Length: 152
Image 1: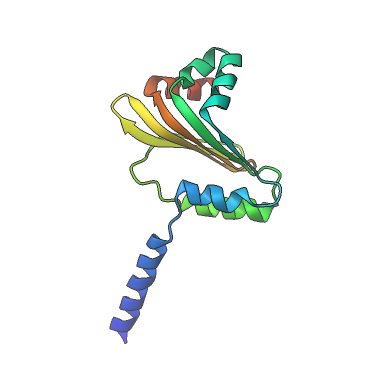
Image 2: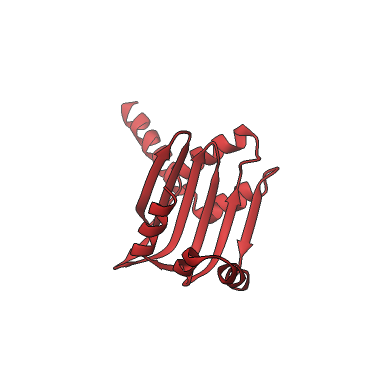
């Protein structure tokens, strides 16, 4: 009987790993919730924003596109599920770059680090304001640190 229970527990543990969600799964799932805002910002639109933005936008010059999910207007139940599911999100190859907790907001920035460059950065905001941003492209580690210091 003990052997059967151990086998069952191992199978359940393996299945939960298989159902880990990727950032793309989170965007799809929560982007359709009532009051959620999901924006795909392509290279052309991003170029227009960078042209009109200030000095800080120059640090994003190698970002090719972005996906933004914003859930602040959603019901609390949706935010709670988002917090739970982003906590279990599969982030293979990503390293935590910045992790900040301030009052009721938690911010986690992850990305693939290649030398002094960060590729495909993901920003996850949980707490009172829930959001996730995926930036496709590259940014220098110095620029990531500079942006984090300005916004903290």
